Length: 283
Image 1 (cartoon, rainbow, N blue to C red):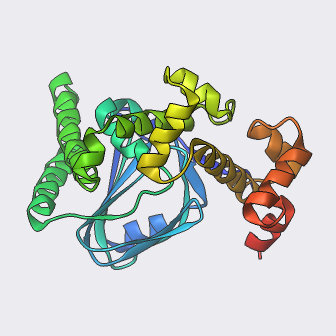
Image 2 (cartoon, rainbow, N blue to C red; image 1 turned 120 degrees about the vertical axis):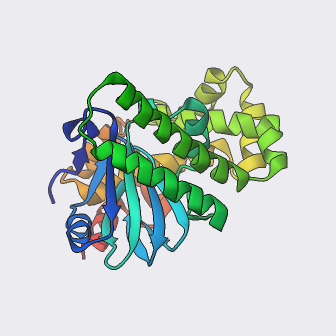
């Protein structure tokens, strides 16, 4: 195994944006030969025609016609099968994603699914994407040109965020519990390596631990401790599968000083030891 590849958007784009129209043999070949990797940026996918599949953090994702999907920075993906489909892949630097939109996307972490959109919204997205791509490919360099590109991008992200938000019940969106759950999931993604105690997240949000737990369980069906453990395990699985670190080194990387405790926790959660997990997925 080699060290997990991290693709940095800044290495291939100076404007915080990269676009690929998947509609030809060259694009299929490029995607299907990408190694296992993670990106430091958001990836938004817009499917026009056909089918595509990929693996995201050990989940198999099927993308179909007139669907939108996204991957968060740091999510591991590979095994892309896109031959014969038509669609768009858009890489976007996190600072270009409006904070209100970002909260909607980050709330979906570990459970985002392809979302079917209406024919009317589909048509709007297609038009925006075409104009955005034409300007992205343009050789103009003036400030207004870049501002125009970012404005088009913001409009597209607004549609994405609205569609994903609309998939959540209105009652949930307006509830205090929903807002707290959003904030918790955002803090969890940012701090999991160094903070695994529910009380610490309650403190960050200026809430009691009991109230935070009540809010998160009411909106997600699971407790704060459950989501902390899930985040820890996905980080561990990534390193076990995609790196050549020892179990002891993996434990250290995700914030455990006692690797034996980490191994016991992993086995309790996954019913197999870290070593057994690695062997199973490397067959």
